Image 1 (cartoon, rainbow, N blue to C red):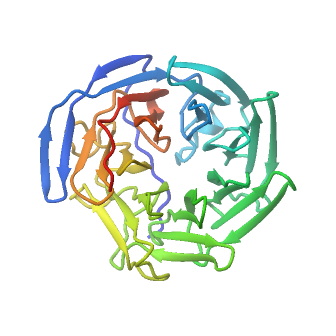
Image 2 (image 1 turned 45 degrees about the vertical axis):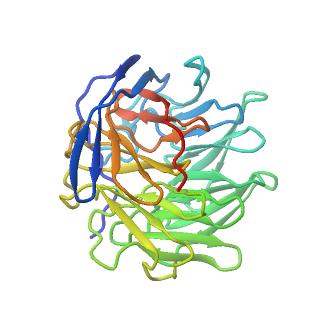
Length: 378
């Protein structure tokens, strides 16, 4: 089966600013239990449409990419959208967007990453390019990806300032060196793998996901070995569309699993290329593939793996307006919270104090939570 990202609209209206306390629901893999505790989430209207990727700067402010349309939608609303693509900087303490960069109709940023020098990098799938905004002088520059129609997707910046990104339609990952302005591209061993999320270990490999559910693998790049791949399952992978990826404190990658309602991890000490040795899937949906769950954003913080589901409903069932939650790094029950807005997606992030941020794409909003109740060291 060849499956590319599907999207679910909920029909909910656009939100302005809303602050409320929301209940949580706890889901163990063996069953579903509910509890109610206060947890504050504030919604802040974004200055652009369809907020997507996010990245913190060195001051703890959050950059948000806003393509102005729902890029992966098969109906291609970007062809009709008149909303320009934008970047914006959100101050979590004042709750204000302090910088708004308008890029235009043909420049629709999807993911964003801040480099060590403070420059803001972003991918532009529709124009097949990567771009950078320099806050020090307000300049914007863009470079075309060498492979045509590659669709650059997620990106990350390594400690040397090199930009790594996935080429979703070209089945490649790539790096761009700002100093030399040279691209280097690396094809995945498996054809039609559709790389999606990517993360850079400061002291080790580049990890990425392969989003096609007929492939459903995790890729690892190192200079000495190039790309090696790890299976997630030896059983059928229908609906298993790995999305974004993060690393825990031990250097083990974690990823969201798309339409099967799960998050997965790979124990690097047990990993063996070409197999699923060392893989553990943590499943919160018992109804199988394509039944109304969609795990997308994911990030590790202090012993917790935070993630969101863009279509789970408020009672823990399928096909609602979304949820966000966490699972302990060492395994255990899931804890979910209901967001105020619709479709929390690939922009989930967590700051050092434990505040969780995520975009609500179909509400044109950025959500910010109160701090979590202390660390859980795994």
